Amino acid sequence: MIEMTTIYQHPVELLQNLLRFDTTNPPGNEGACIAYIDGLLRSLGIETLLLEKAPRRPNLIARLRGAGNARPLLLQGHVDVVTTADQAWTHSPFAGEIVDGFLWGRGTLDMKGGLTMLLAAFMRAKVENLPLPGDVILCVLSDEEADSDYGAKFLVNEHPELFANVRYALGEFGGFTFSIGGKRFYPIMVAEKQVCSIKATIRGPAGHGSMPIRGGTAAKLARMLHTLDRHRLPVHVTPIAHQMFNSLADELSFPVAPLLRQLLNPTLTNRVLDVMGARGRVFDPLLHHTVSPTIIRGGDKINVIPSVITVELDGRLLPGYAPEDILAELQALVGNEVEFEVTRYDPGPKMQDMGLFNTLAGILREADPSGFPGPLLLTGVTDGRFFAHLGIQTYGFLPMQLPDDFNFTQTIHAADERIPVAALTFGMDAVYAALQRFGTP
Image 1 (cartoon, rainbow, N blue to C red):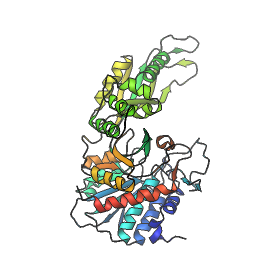
Image 2 (cartoon, rainbow, N blue to C red):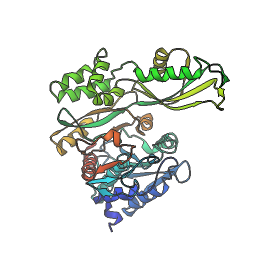
Image 3 (cartoon, one colour):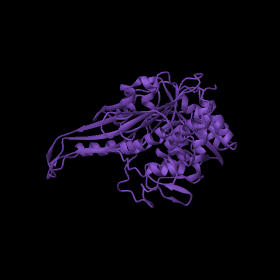
């Protein structure tokens, strides 16, 4: 049996232990998993602080002291995972089985695997007395897979002093490999889209179900859903998208390189995305605000035609935009027979601070001279959006080498989530190198 004080040397076994805690959110129940991590850190003499907004939903903070030559670096990650309900898994999602060179389980990618890299590097730095340029703060969070109300949002709002003077953080998502044009890239997340949940309300006459109403609420609903399915919102080329696609194009040749650059021309963007097929579907939300209808409510009785139908839309804003921008675009697309209102908005950082990017990119170039690191705009959101309120720039930096045929984005949150065993050591070593160098420009 591996000792608690040396388990950081065995990241696969560490991740297996984390996977075996069922932290499905809701309800979360992250307490036992975080207590285990707390025990690991305390076994090394690391002081910890546990803070919770609700019982059994704690957050852990620990700090290693550095030389004071750089501002503190934050390592942040969450232990909660999404549901496995109604998913057909090949191997149990909470058993931590190793099969065919992969470790299988819910959270291997999002994000207990990444947390393992951060935690193992943090523990290693303590044991090896690594000379740190500045303090390193480890923050293990609850509730990221819901709204972070019990996790990052709670800590930022109620305990901002814990993160005083922090400029940069490492967290999810980025550093995973993907191939395009025969070359391997390591996208480092430097920006993410913004949550902008929207409720669409459709009104019309009520009536008896035996007397159909043509053009009523159901018909209006159908028109709206068809319009949203068939039409994109307008193209927006943000500065980070410009950086991302140009950095990819710089390393590629004809015909891929010019095609990527054409994405940055709004008059050509949509046509190029269509030509690119499956790859275009990945790039599409990086160049548009998006909405996805997720919850439809209407009617109470089978024999009553409803006068009101509501649709909840998972809206995502590009960096630098505000809710009124997407509301105006939706209204222009759908027309006035639908009312739109914002139900939740989590603003992201106004601008990206690229001060640590070259250091992280250099680490990946050394680890894999044949790979190409570049900036990434994430279509989803992370806890980084809350730490941004404190002026902290989060880099998605959980490096992992993946097989060329491994679809990272389609495996997260899906059945058979898994990670290559070798990827864990690769990522831990990269994070450890970052702890050595984060004070260098």
